Image: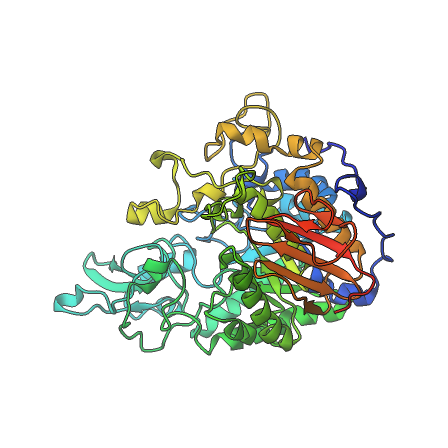
Length: 576
């Protein structure tokens, strides 16, 4: 399925599209120094991408086998979710060893081959790093438990005495994001009930204490370990975390994180000391870049309330980028999208960084399902509003200035799998709360590659095992094999948009100017004459410019932009 041929001429697949300009020249050293500024990175959820061994779990060799597919799609690089040794309580985000590969995914030799193969294809390779917490099976946490109160290793975590009679109550009233109290009491080496430790996610994920210098030193060693193996940068998990209020006081809204499933407790997240860490990490990465002129990227998962808050993380001496989740969270409405884009352009781009756009990831309901809610005036001729809107949103995102991240399966138009049986669910949110609300397994079901039945080419071998999460029968309509063969598919829309983005000088970095448009239509011009317009309404609207579109998310009659549709034009008289 991976070697299927693809027509590389987008002008054949969009009604009236113009021929694609000739490619720009090969990258120069200057391009290498700023490669991340307008890159499109593909998020690989390793466990669910491609299984090379037949055990039903994706692995690094599977990722390597899929690299030609990703190169053909047109992305600039990959981000690998955690593949480190882990008990898998949160599928790798509970790390037991930051310097190795879990045997279920391969070994360090397999990782090295993957990086070499990616670079040979011209693809960057980012790895996930988890600095806020580790696994409760991490050797240092086990050592801290064995030392008992006052032990030096306990200072590397948040151990504290309880309150109330015999310390039977937690040290404060905070709740964990994944449900329940954020504290667990330990049994001391002598068998007595003892101190409590902090975990802002699950008890299996104790939080590091970043006020302890040894923690900072250990993570700098981890950066260098992977940089020396050739990685091009790091996606940083919970990048607004790490530091907690030094006094660990009670919160006025202790269940806020649990209720929202977001890092909103101001005592546990976004503390001012965090910026010292990112300056240190930037210094490490810049030292490697100085040796060969090739930037090593730091991109953070920064969940903060506003674009102005996020801008603090991407100042010139801190992170290169931070995911701008406000676009992902925006409701399907022209005004909402324009507001978040305007905020980002005003606050984030002003730092000298570029905005990092994202519509999907491994923690969110897939866009096709998220956008599917009908409106009172729903177009009767649009049986799949979520799919149409997701296609339009993709063209919008890829036309915006800055960088973009694509989550695996997004290019196949995969909806969320909503009917996984309870016994199949593995998300710790479900285990801790018993509620299916915001459970993330539905966007993590292994990819369908080929065929008409599970495992849909996901697993290899003569007798492949069942995928670790069950695939629904309707995945047969979304295989890569089928998508590549259908020139009207999501895959071809992404492929064509990425090809144009790579070759049109108006796209990527550069200015944006809003155009006057009807209330439900959002239109802007990029550079010297690339116009993007999206009709967020259900009824047709006049096209903002005349002429044949270069690329459309749905067929467009002359002079008309249908509802829930996006289009790109070349306009000789339009400039940003």
